[in-house]
Every structure is written in C-alpha cells, then in structure tokens.
Image 1 (cartoon, rainbow, N blue to C red):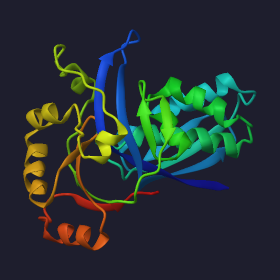
Image 2: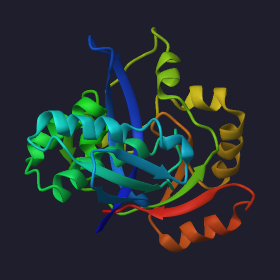
Image 3: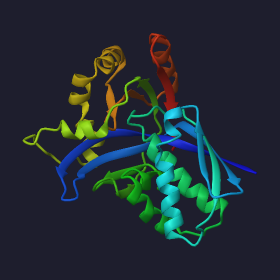
Length: 268
C-alpha cells in the first residue's frame, strides 16, 4: 500500500536577521506564509529495514534530510525496525528560500508517525523537528506564523489571502554563505507586526543575494516593473504579492516566457 502526501512550500513575507546567538544560530524575525506549491512524497512499506529514496532530482537520493528524520524517529520511539521506499516528486527548487527541504522533513515526521502508528504527540514531534532544522517545526504546525528566535518561536497569525508571482531562478543559494555575508557592524532594528502592515519591511539577505547572483539580479529588474519585489528566505526566489487574482494573472501574462515565473496562492 502506498501513502501519498503533499509537502508545501512557504514564503517569507520579510526576513529580519538579528544578533548571532551562543549556539551559532541567529535570532530572526519573519512572517512565514504557506503557499499552494508543493512536492509530492509517496511512502511504501518495505519487508526489510532499508530506507530507499528515489527522486526526479537525483541529488536527493544519497544526501537527504529525510534520512536524519527517520534515524531520529527510530532513536526516540519504540518503533526501531522498519523500511520504506520513498519517492519524491521535487517541484520546489533546491536553495530557493521556499523551505522545500524543511517541508519534506516535516512531512516525513507526520507520515512515519501515521503509517507505523507510532503515537508520538504533536509536542514530541515539534521537539524532534527542532533538532533537524530551524524551519521544520513551522511546517509541522502547518499554519501561517510570526516567527522569532532561531525560527523555533512560532505564533499563529491571521493574514489576508494573497497571490504571489514567483521568479524561480536556477541558482542554488547557500544559506550559510548568506549568513557569512552579513556585516558584523550592521545596524540591527526589531520589526513589529505594525511595521509589516505598513510595508516597512525588508529581507536582510536581499543586498547580498542581488550582488552575488547576476541571474537573480536580472529577474529582479524584470519583476520590478510590476510591483515591489521581495526575496524569500536566504534567496533564490523573488516574488511580487497581489491581492487580486485577475491582476496577478495579468502580470504573469506580461512576463517573458523564457524565464521561470509561476503564479501561486497562499494556502490560508
């Protein structure tokens, strides 16, 4: 029997990187919004203890955060021996700032807990998720959230439905490189929800990403003709936000077709 799950992406409506912590993570402020853009992950039980991953992106078959998730579940539960064939239809680009890897990890936590009836509570899963990656707990909560701490302090938030025109580059932007690019003497200012509502927001990595990647800079130039352009996460994906679906479709129709532009909506 096969079990199929959608693994949704997120948009950072803004990203404010604050001070570096003693654990070498940075404190951040952000607003994460789930979008209707997803990978599809199919799980099938095996008769042995092997975990076999297949994907349309071959790079994911040997090194994958999913292996870490399953290892952690085996260590932390009474279900020590099980095997799975896992097929990943990868639609969310790697290094795009849309959280694809973290979403896949969260989906695996939920799927394995369900398929093998392990019985871990949501609180237990959230605790384990934080060991795998900073963004993984958000995808387990599966709500739009105001995000603080290193990404682990999540407050559910209501936000209006939006349509996003994504500019998906072919660049795999390294989060660690972007964090290293932050100046030690930069000015750090907190962002409030009122700042977000008033449009007083930015992404701390925007300048570095545009400086480092000429192809993303080109996409920014194209998209900026149609509205304010934002960067999601530590980079890779630019987007324009529109509340009106018809206007969003009109923008999409005017964009050059030799680039990868995509129209998606917020999930909630």
